[in-house]
Image (tube, rainbow over all chains, first blue to last red; front, top):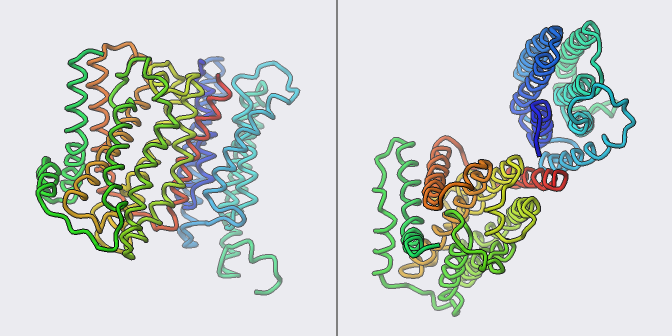
Length: 214
Length: 306
C-alpha cells in the first residue's frame, strides 16, 4: 500500500500523459508536457538526494531548464506563429484516445513485469515508464498536426529517459546531457520544418501530405 | 446512532438542499458583480409555488402529475440511504445500501422526469428530455465504475461499508475527481448546462420542466436540490476518504466536517461557474470522457493494488 516518492512522481507523469491524450488544445498539451517533464526532474533530484551523487542534480537542472521550460515555450511560440490552437486527431477523437491511454497504462503495467530486466539498481516500477513510451507512440500516430506529433515524440523521449533513470544504474552524465541537447536540436529543426511546411502548403496537416497535389 | 443524530439528519435533509442552492446562487451572483437574491430565496420560491394553483395541459396523462412525486420519493429514499453527510446507518441496513441499487434508484427518478417532459408533448420538453437522456448515458459508466473501484478496494458493495473502510488515498482521490466531474453534468451545472439560462437552444434541465407549474414545479425543484446535495456530499465523503484520520474521529465532528466540505464544494463550483463558459454541445462527450478516464484509472489502481 505504500508508495515511494519516485513511484508517486512517475505515476503523476503517466497520469498527465493519459490526460494529454484527451486534450485537443495545443496549449493545454504543452502545459501538461512541461509539468510532466518537471516531474521527471523531481525524480532525478530525489534519486540524487538518496544516493548522494551530485551529477543527478545537475542533470535535473538541465532537464528542468531545457526540456521543461525551453522546449514547451519554443513550441508554444511556433504554434502561435502558425496560428493553430487545436488538433482534433486523425483516427481517434481525443475522448476515445484518452480511454485508449488508460488501456495502454494497463498494458504497460502488465508488460513491464514480463521483461527480463537485470534486477540491479532498479528503483520504482517500470510500468509507468512503459506507459509513457506507449502513449508517446500513440500520440505520434494519431495526431493530425506536425506540432502535436513533436509533442508525442517528447512524451516518448520522456519515457525513455525515465526508464534509463529508474531501471538501470543510469547512463553516464555526458550521454544523458547529449541526449537532452539532441532532443533540443531535434525539436528546433522540427519547429523550423513545420514552419516551412505551413509556408509551402498553407497548413500543417500531415494527412494532406500524402497526395502529390491537393 | 442516537436520537439527536436522527433529528439533526432530518432537519439537514429538509433545510440543506435549498440552503446549498441559495448559497451557490448567491456566490455566483457575487462573482458576476450582482447583489443577487438573498440566500433564503429558494425557500421563498418553494413556498410561493406551493400556494399557487397549477396549470395542466389537457394533453397530459397521469404520468405528468405523478412523475415529480416519484422523483421526490426516490430522491428522499436515496438521501436517507446514501452516506452523503457522513456514515450514519448501522450495519444492519447493509442490504439496502448497495451502491448499484442506489445509483439506479436516482436514475429511476430522473427517468420519470424525462417521461413527464415527453408527456406534455411540447417541443422544448422533448428536446430537453432527449438531451438529458444523452447526458445520463454518458455519466452513468463513470459513476458506476468510480464507486465500483471504491467497492473493490473496500471489498464490499454496500456504501455503509465502503465509507467506513480505510481505502488507499490514490483510489479515493481518483474516484472523487471522477465523481465531481460527472456530478456537474448529472446536475445540469455549468460546463454542460447553464441552470440560469432560458434560451431554448441551450437549456437542458430547464427545458424539461418548462411545462410544470405550481406544486408540481415546487416538488421537481426540491427533488433536484436533494440530488445536488447527494452528489456533492458523496464527492465530499470520497475526498475525505483520502484522510485516514477522518475515520477515527467522533461521529458528530465527522458529520460537521462532511457538511462543511459539501458547502465548500458548492461554493467552489459557483466560483468556477463565474469564470468558465458553457461547453459547446458537441464537446460534452469529450468533457465527460475525463470522468470516465479518472474512474477507469481508479478501478485499475484498485485492481492492481488490492
